[in-house]
Amino acid sequence: MAQFDRNIPYNNLPLLPPPADILDSEVLMKWGLASRYLAELNKNILRLPNPAMLINTIALQEAKSSSEIENIFTTEDELYKAISDSVKEAGASPHTKEVLRYREALWAGYRTIMKKGEMDLKGTIAIYQQVKNTTQKIRPPQSKVIIKRGNSELRPGEIIYTPPRGAGIVEKKMQNLIEYLNGDKKDKTDPLLKMAIAHYQFEAIHPFDDGNGRTGRILNLLYLVNQGLLSQPVLYLSKYIIEHKDEYYFSLQSVTERKSWKRWIVFMLNAVEYTARYTNRQVDEIIDQMAETLDYGKSKIKWYNKEVNEALFAQPYIKPKTIGEVLGRTSRTTLSGYTSQLVKHKILSAKEDGKEVYYINNDLIRILEGK
Image 1 (cartoon, rainbow, N blue to C red):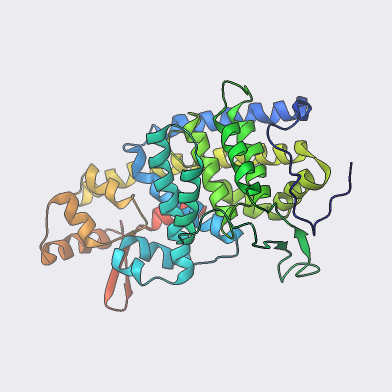
Image 2 (cartoon, rainbow, N blue to C red):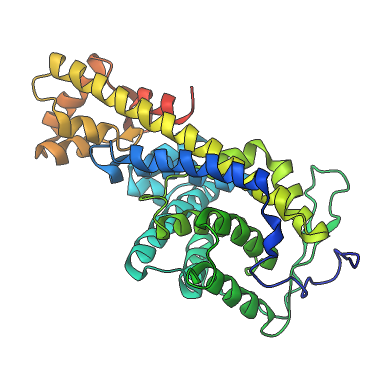
């Protein structure tokens, strides 16, 4: 095997599919476990009274964690405030806005994939544009994009990878990737394995100037939805990647430099298995807590009902108008009385932020943050 040179554009990145001999008994065993737990998660989602209702909160955690992989940090408190009020979202910090854009790109991509029924380059570019709030498309051939070590790493600034570049090269490799994902009739590889393979390929192509990691992780979820392995984009993969960040990048690099596909695929299958089990527990805990809160709320407050309960679990920070929309009330005095009762009985807690008051579902936050 020719020695890989990190300083030269990897224009020889092989097209997909990879060699068939990358699958062995260990990979297939990992695939079986990951498939099992993913199927259990997909089934568990249907237990939710309104499957789309809670996806927003899980998607929010995915958005935050995916951004943290790219060293974009925001606090849960700031994020929850921003999504509870569009006015506050407009005044959010740049990092919070980046996280919120990830969430919106995920949902926009989900709607597109449900409508079109297949992956395409136009949709991929649209996801990237929303993640980065840009009109740019595939990076131009003259852009000397390189991947360097971070400032906190050993040998900071050292080049670790130079992605393909040149007239039409990135476009050709991206078209091959899209054809691979959509080519079910030609390639019978299981979708879970194809997702892992395609994720490496996307990151190796590195088609955009920035935001490739976040865009690639959104594509993972959309492909699993497209293939029927998930009904909603709720697989919280970024949590596992953060907890195993060094292994994630080392495994990617192993494919590039040593064609070690097995190590990479096993890593991704472990990520799917762990994440599916984790998300299953989250869904179970949220459903159990919703039932407990509903029974308690109805016993203490005469107007408390199933619809109000579901609204309180739709996101961690609640504004009084949310309750008013459910109950058909608009009077500030009435809504103030309702929220006061919810605080009195400790269903919500109040938190002041300047002139604003937010009402917090601490039980939901506890579950989302894994406490």
